Each structure stands twice: as C-alpha cells, then as structure tokens.
Image 1 (cartoon, rainbow, N blue to C red):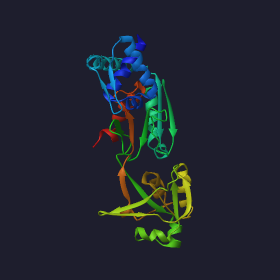
Image 2 (cartoon, rainbow, N blue to C red; image 1 turned 30 degrees about the vertical axis):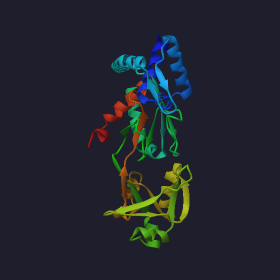
Image 3 (cartoon, rainbow, N blue to C red; image 1 turned 180 degrees about the vertical axis):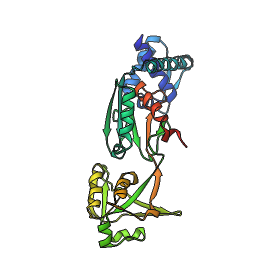
Image 4 (cartoon, rainbow, N blue to C red; image 1 turned 180 degrees about the horizontal axis):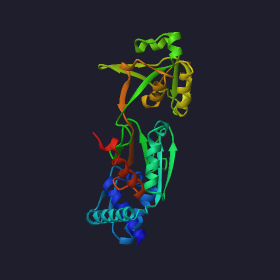
Amino acid sequence: MANNLDDLGVFVAVVKAKGFRRAARQLGLSPATVSETISRLEARLELRLLTRTTRAVTPTEAGEALARRVAPLLAEMEDSLHAARSQSGALHGRLVLNVPGAVMVDILPPLVEAFCALYPQVEIEIMVDDRMVDAVAAGCDAGIRYGEALAQDMIAVPIGPRRQQAALAAAPAYLAREGCPAHPRDLLHHACLRARFSSGALVPWTFEKEGEEIRLDPKARLIIGTGGSAALIGHAVAGLGVCLTFRNWLEPHFKAGHLVPVLPDWWEEFEGPYLYFYGRRPPAALRAFVDFLRAQPQVAGP
C-alpha cells in the first residue's frame, strides 16, 4: 500500500511539473528513478498514463482522470499527517539546509535554536557553502540565498531582516593616518580589505546615492575568503585598511568605537535573505520550519 501511494505521488508530481526532470528536482529524486516509478505504475495498472515526447510529457485521458482524483486525496492525507504530528508535538524527521556563511553570523543561529526547542526530535544539518549551488541538487531540502534569481517553480520565504546594507568602515587610526574618503572613487587610492567568494569572484564594491550607482574594483591590500569575514573585520579594526561588509556585523564595532562608518550616504541597500525550496508539498520537517519562519515578526511584518 505504501509503495502504491508513493508511486501515485510521483505520478501526480510529473503531471503537475509537465516533465520528469522538473518533477525529480521537486521530489529530490533522480530523473531515472521517476521514470522507472511511472513505468512500474503503468505496468501495475495496465494503463498508459503519460504520453512522452522530446518536448513534453502530457497525461493521457486515463492519466488526467487519475491525477484529478488522486491529487486532492494525497494532499489531504499529507495535511492530516502534518496536523497530527504538530498536535502531538512529536514531529520527527531530518532537515538539511544549504546556506551562505553570511547568515551564520547573526541571522540563522537564533532561529535554529528556537526551532530546535519547539521540535526537539527533528535532526538538522546545515551545509555552509558560498558557491551558490542548487541546494536540492546538492541533496538538501532547502537553501538560503541573497537576491538570487529563482526558478518559476521555487517557493521563497523571507528569513531575517527584510532589508540589509553593505557598510564601509575603517579604524580611527587608519583614517587619521590616510584621511577619510569623500567620494567612493577616493577608495581607489586607499588600502582596501576585500572578500572573495568560493567561486573565485571578489565580492563587488557597489555604492548608490540619489539614483547614482558606482561599481568599483579597487586594488586589494588584503583578500580573505568569505568564510573568514570575522578576520577581515578584525584586520580593519587593527588599522590595515577599509573594509566593506554587512552593516549588522559592523554595528557592534561602531558602538564600541573600534571602527568608524565611511561614506554612509553611499551605502547600498539590498533585500535580506530568503529560504527557497521546490514544490508546494515539502517534507514535514521543512514545512514546520517554513511555518515557523512565517510566524517570525521580521517575516510577517511589512
């Protein structure tokens, strides 16, 4: 019985996705496994359910009728199981997230801790990776990204602050020695501390003010991988040069007087991070995490 339900779930996913590859991506399976599952289901029912061409996969008349009847039943069953788990407080499962290092400083950890307190029997694995790989293809349930163009079949949920800023900072001693830039292009004559993504690209230095945008590629006195952002800020505190990074990371140093804001009128603002995943019927642990995120004030607010 369980195998029959699983096979029907794969069949409905293929019909909705209109293809094996997209359905496989949504389900976290290989296209070959999805194709074999459909063939097994058709053999069991002695019916041809899908018409396959090089351009599309479409249901036959019998397949369309079956999908129309089965889809709401599967959805209702999944909702019932999720409700039962939630009410009992005994949600089990495993949640694997693929995230950039930027959210591991002060955004994701408190959320994970609060979620673990609510669901102590859910196992969580966090893969920290700045290469911006496809999270599902990497074997994860969901990913967290900044401003990434998402495929049409992805669902995105805000996580953390809705807006963030890239702030420029330097130590008082450095500015006293080298002078304070009056315009972003002045940075071309300063010692710049830059970060590099795992892909090999340098983190861009972009500034904006009153509709004007300036993108610079200043020569770096020091380059550190994005995983070493704390060290980058530490070197700025030590007076080695000017650094550009998340404002929320720099605020404690501004308050302590270890760093001074540089060109604050030019700081670029951008959207905060999003959790994204494929499909509208995620696994129970992921669905619980999504519901938890949506209940957070910074997500539910305007």
